[in-house]
Amino acid sequence: MPNSKDKEAFLAVYKLIEGEIVSDIRNLPALSDGVKQQLIDYYSECLPYTVPGGKMTRGLTVIKGVEVLRGRELTEKEYKDAAILGWLVEWLQAFFLVADDIMDASITRRGSPCWYKVPNVTQDNAINDALILENMIYQTLRRHFKSHPSYVQLLELFIDTTFQTEVGQHIDTNGTPYADGKRAPLDLSRFTLDRYQGCVRYKTCYYSFYLSCALALSYCGYDPESDEGKALYKKAEDVCMILGEYFQIQDDVLDAFAPPEVLGKIGTDIEDAKCSWLVCKALELVNDDQRKVLVDHYGKHDPEGVQKVKELYKELKLEEMYHAYEEEQKTACDELISKIEPENFQELFKFLLGKIYKRQK
Image (cartoon, rainbow, N blue to C red; front, side, top):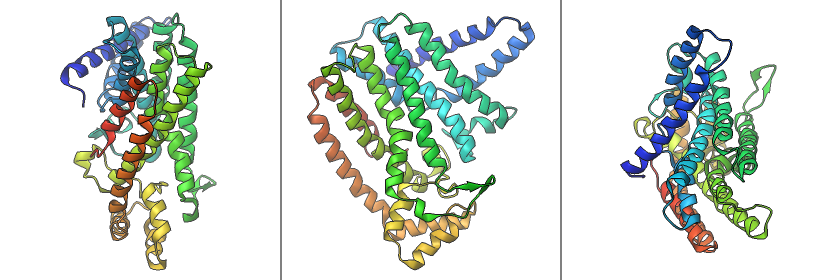
């Protein structure tokens, strides 16, 4: 984990961005002072509630990436730039999480009620807040990087990653089809590892891992069209796809088995009929009687049924299978990282792997 000094410096940059956004609201034309103050009061609560508060690994990875690529301690300007880009990744995360919690009807996030569950927010407001959080990324990017030589490249990374993640979200939320606005009968044939891997690549790998690495490369002037640049971005993508799949499978296992007070949220993958690694693996292993447990209980908001599904996972020894998979992925990542040139760039991926290996929340 980052030390307290790292966190303090990083959070100070968050406060800078928040202050700039509040100032933008204050300067909106053709609004009365009363309306402006209402907006300022509302978003002065929304932003610190939804944006900071997580582990901040995505944001800190941008700073780490710029450091290893520069091969030295960053100047004050470089640190500020890298931290702003890092916070914009965290802003993207906030946009996704606010929307995702509504889609999944989740209850808690980071140990507190989901934003749409906060009194006086309402689901309608929270949907609009997710859209505003997304827009704030581009306001801030334009404010700080419009004159930077890599501005267009940085901009396109956020646009491309948002599209990729939303494709992944569609795959995730449509594991069970709907007809006339109602959920169709559960179709277990849709829960395959092939579908799962496609979902993970687009929903998790790009925004949780690749984006931070690519932003660091772009900020440091690596052209994705040059031979050297192409090779570096491709190596980063290759490692990030493995790390992202490992991270998401880890997330699925924690959703089912980690205590909510440790995880920081109440897992709902079973109730929400998610195409998780656990159900995909279970369907490869079950006999007819075990399959009936999934048919009868998967995707239903029934605590007893959810518990029966979890008991089936334990009966199939899926946790043990996951731990074996985890060690295989660690070995595969180590080997892939060791082949990256320049050698100092390896430190970024070692940093990322260290953040997720055997994590508990």
